[in-house]
Amino acid sequence: MFHDAHGLETTCASAAAVMAYDHTIDGYLLNRFNVSQRLKACLSEDPEFCMAHVLRGSFSMLSFNEKNVDFARSSLAQAQLLAGKATRREQAHVEALSLWIEGNLDRLMDAWSAIVQQWPQDILAFRLHHFLGFWLGRPEAMLALAESVLPRYGRELPAYGTVLACRAFSHEECGSYTIAEHAAREALALDPSDIWAAHALAHVFEMQGRRVEGIGFIEANEKNWNGGNNLLHHLWWHRGLYHIEREEFAETLALYDSKFRDLSSIMTTAMPDLYIDIQNAVSTLWRLERAGVDVGDRWIELADKAQPRSGDCRNPFTLPHWMLALARTGRHAEAAHFIKGIEDAAAQAAPPLADTLSHAALPICKAILAEAEGHGDAAVALMRPALATMHRLGGSHAQQDLLEQIFWRFAHGAGAQADRQLIFERIRGTRHLPPQHSIGWRDAARLC
Image (cartoon, helix red, strand yellow):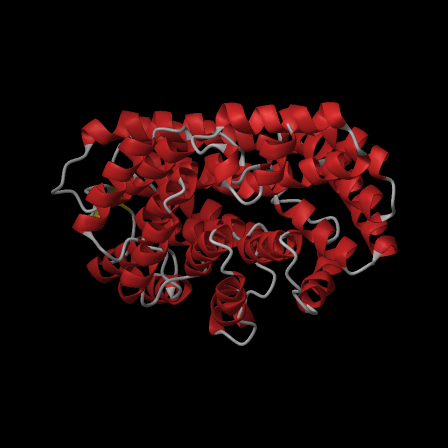
């Protein structure tokens, strides 16, 4: 029996295999683009490494892409064959992967939490729980686990920085910006290349309106992020938002074309329709157009990628973004087909996904199409009930702001004063930053 870098018993063939496994885990925790190559090297050291097959299946599921689920199933089948000789902890990971593939997301979250409670140094279970908790719109669950684990860690442990980074982002999403900033900066002091910690700090800057500081931070720290994965695109998206707020629209378009939607880059070529990249691109174009900026034909390649993803609802937050791309290119028939795909997926999915699709994603997507077809009153009526539940789509406050701005635009266009007031009061009551200090809410602050 071997032990991994976190002191956990690990069932594998050799010390070289466990070292390769540790290297893979590090790549995942630090958001490195070559994590798949690291995993391939691990499996070459030990093709019967149960947890390596769990990792391979988990990495497939992390893509939120239905076409990768069969690959995850094959990895699960291999892990199940090997689980008989594995530890109880490793067997629990195999069961968790099965729950993930089946779509039993509530039980999956409980399974990862149970692993962490019994084996606090299981950083993989902790990080996966943090990831999915975010995309289920459950920052309170992310925060609860981070705070319960933190006392079991110290600076001498290899994953301490990861725990701090996750604590930082959890606190940011729960509105505790001072704690979030302190935790993020502590994590970065331990490892300046920690992209998740940098991401948490970028969110703090966004929510507090510290745009100049945010731009400077990203510029100064890019040198530390060599080898990073698509999360780098998201950090450059944050910088783009700072520039939009400063009405520096040319800078945002330059970042769009050269950084976070560079169609010739290795990362974009490898995953041209990755959910987070689509979200970054669509939300930027929509915000720029709302500010009166001509974005040219940039919507077209996004809309081209939407229709093949019809019925793929593993990440509900991405669905309104796909719908916006179809609507902005006038592809109303394709948009109607896309909505039918969501309806079919909702009918087949298990809770909580079925509820999120039915009560949040579907009405918002229908509203986007209705407004595109000139039915403003219907758009407002369709989207209004989703305001209470759309946080369950996942996404951060900075990302969900797009949906809130969309509702304001629909209500304003329809002359629905009560609905304009509704969304404005929601923003004013939940945001640290006064609405008049945000470009997306200045009109609302003036009119309400």
